[in-house]
Image 1: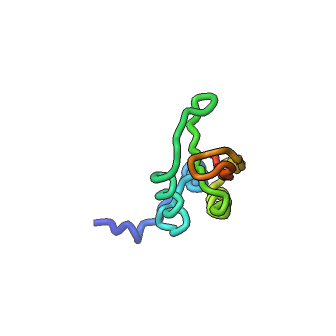
Image 2: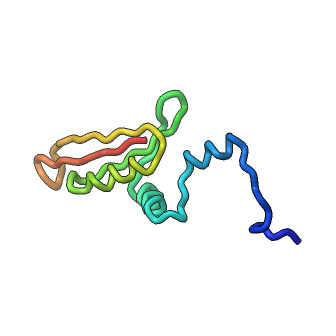
Image 3: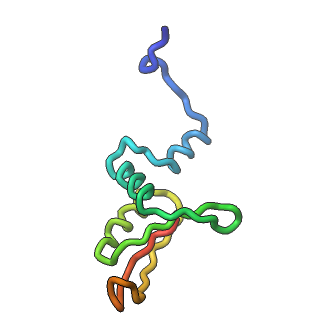
Length: 98
């Protein structure tokens, strides 16, 4: 029987590149981000048949989205908007899109 810890595994260049683009949910910050996306994220069809994930939170939670943006290697954007809602006449929210 082969013990998986005693075997040296070699990754192809493609596999190594995928490691840089995948979430590692064993890391606390990435696991938190994954859960946050699952509960508060919105998925939509983007341009050129690519998907898009967007999270919108109140302005006071902007630092959470900035942290998320720093955890991934994909291009993303953070935008701010102010609008009238049932909460306030001038509610300011922050959106992060990947």
